[in-house]
Image (cartoon, rainbow over all chains, first blue to last red; front, side):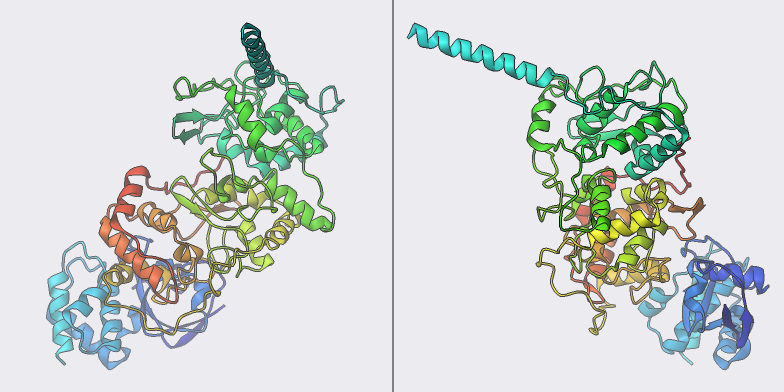
Length: 148
Length: 439
């Protein structure tokens, strides 16, 4: 199978139902994307597929062949990603940091589709869990990004 | 007058005596005194027939020896327990002759003459061929290890625990003849009909029951046959050609794939079907699965199911109360378009569970998640998690109402009290792979 990840093409050899996360981390060594719950509950494994935030631990690789996959490693390859990361740094969002690659991917996907999200839209899109409780900092950062 | 009284009394005595004879008689088995060599080939064939009948699902519980019984089955009158059918001479059926065994399997009468409860699907098993009964006997006598595990007493109180009235129930509701090939249908169709009606006992779950607890139909001559029924908090869907609530949009190869691998692009096994898949259908030969599919595809829908589902171009109501829960909890796997992920994660758009008026399957799956689907010894990669501790009754009802009214689905709304009822009656599915061995 051929996967398009972060702008380059990778040949992978895997059973069709293998979760995308397994390939990203184990086969391709892109370990910025984290394993959290394995049940699509926490969002630590969030990547983008064709611009949509997707939980890669429950995404069978068969379904993403030929689509544009983006992981945290390429987040600063465009202007929006750079702005999101800068806002995260400015507001010192991360504490332990484990969930943050997923948080950043979810926030970037939201702002890409909805540059000026309302509170309700932010709440609906940012369902990733953070055990350190960095939610207020995340919300502040996204609000600042939404204000331009 | 006195004479009339005497006549009436005499008539009464005759009736009671005749009735007593009828309910206590030794029922006929064509296999009495049939010579039988329990050859390895016959034992192996019997093991396959036991797979067709899924005997292990009820007569074994995880952690105990195979076929030593113990599964609890709730009835409105109290629990009953599946019995030990290992060849142990004390606790099992080690003293059964072939015709004793035949009477139990096909007619629901134990060797000591007591009637079995029809939780044992003998109204279906009566369709077994003589040859398959012989093979089953060979397997249970020589292929299964004896286990001295005592049977548990049923919890049904007197007078309902009297067994003789079941003889009358049987006379009214159970067939007693083996399957007869239907003229005008080809060999594949007849093989499929035999497995579905007989060993597979598909109707035990998928055919609605009357108030007297009998299946409303035992074969395709009646449109109630396999038309869908509520069972144990799940809705076993129609297996007829209803385009939305049945198998009308499934091809025969897709039916085969579902029974062989537990999944296809339309659905993944849930509820008791997971057990039927884990222990039975995946072991069936390709020819037998093809025959089952061919037979099921011949059962017409009831015509009240509306036009076949197609994806609706109408916008999705993302502001409805259930949409937020759906986006947060469901969409990662089932998709914002409700289409799932190929055969790996089932679609909710166009799914029979989203279209049928009974919403139990959706509620139960959301509350309790799914049991492990174990195909060829491997547990599935994607399992529906239980949400009973994360979502309230109202949130689940709203999310399911959203699912059942989006993407072209035409299901009715779900009420919080329906969720409440099932929450109280059901338990979360086990995340552990459970494999019931037969040997």
